[in-house]
Image (cartoon, rainbow, N blue to C red; front, side, top):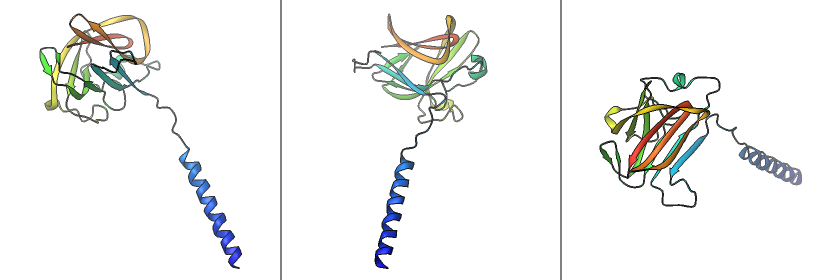
Length: 181
């Protein structure tokens, strides 16, 4: 009787152990708007970054940019969580000095120009809880049209004469946001 009880207990323990192990190995599918990051300098071998933005990359999927980033409305600059930008040194954003640190980066799209916003809120989902009182700086920049359409929302940096330009592109919409070092 004791042997049967012992065997039953051991068999039950092994079954439970194996079932926990199987559940621990399940992974979620790839996010429809995967998170990405862009930085300057963009060379992965250069650890001395000046700026980095973390954002999600929504796809157009036969939709138009103006339906996804609506004119005149605050936009999270991507999908899912609002984009977060890290300045590794103090920089000028328009005529405003912005201290090194991590901020949320919002945009307000328009037909001819977009407004870029640096805000102190962090870990924000979307732009649902955007609070203008927490804006650090705003800058209005012109919109241009690219020759090639980009399916996925994309951000890239390059050096400019007096700092760094952050380029945003989606569909044929192109926006360059300048930061002065």
